[in-house]
Image 1 (tube, rainbow, N blue to C red):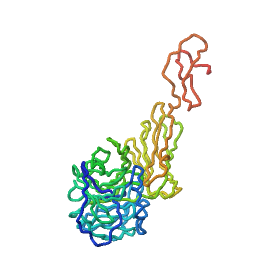
Image 2: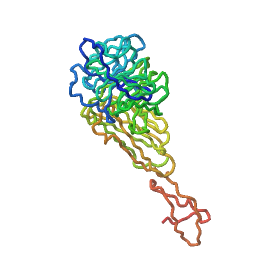
Image 3: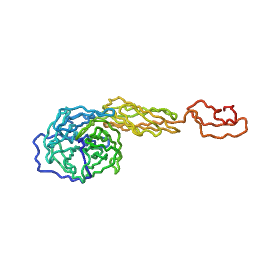
Image 4: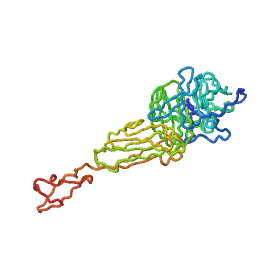
Length: 455
């Protein structure tokens, strides 16, 4: 479904070389990569492919997201563009017989896929033209809907039996190994990042697939369990995971500690998309964009005052940004937060904003407002930007602002009792420094009279 196909269940890896298979006499395809695979947590494409240069008619890989929905016998490739709260699509090339297990070759930048009816290897160029490269020697049957590339440029697919993965060399169009899984794949697509394949399951879980050991581990995640499930998967340029739900939204997931026994998954954003059946996706992010974020706000406010923060995302290049997500966990002392900025939503204490293309040198500003809660405290607010593209300088992706909250005008400390017989009694009254006048007479016990020497 995506450049990184689907994986299911835990697996013991058994690589079985295939021999004695007849090779089609059609010209061999260049290497393909399914689902926009990222080589590591930084989201860089796989190992250097020095033997194959990017094809002149391959995609530019400056932030393309590819999408198909094979509800009928034909496919229309769609090019996705990220925007505020949405991903919009435009058709690319003519409609052709249905295919799936789509992905992008990190070497040539072609999109590759398998035709559903006969499992022929298809190659798609930057104009959307599809070439039937031919049959794959050693690949049985048809109906392959799961596919993806690893960092080395190997193409893995799964079809009628989701407990088996076939490793394919797309240049020679041969199956070069078979992975026998211990349990069945539960996701509809796989995508490669940080050294693993990943898949989203219908119940909102995420599976991690280790190609070296064949182990597949399923983790709980913040993905919503929304039927009919996540048909398309791809990897952002920074290594984040993108999952298209067939009901019509794209979920972006950031993974902390992907190698650990307990990875931490963060649902960064949801963008509305188009619904469809047999959804498949892939992506191509190679152009780098250094995004920074700067958060500003007042140094001090009074309890009950309106507080306004501004979050500015700036692209320092060297390439245009294809899109971004900003997350901000709002402090508990900020009441009734809201944002008028398109593409922003607030759920509980979490602000999530998505934006589209940002040219080199351009900025986009997000506004967040709320009410300062009661009591003296300090509001600490931190925003983080996640670029869609590889970011050469992640050190400027986070910004914080601190706002001191004081008591309102006229408020004084706890009531006390004055005693004494002198004509003058020293009085200390704690006063909010935000004010400039106090009324001592109003706080004196009437037994002392209505006159007082202010000192």
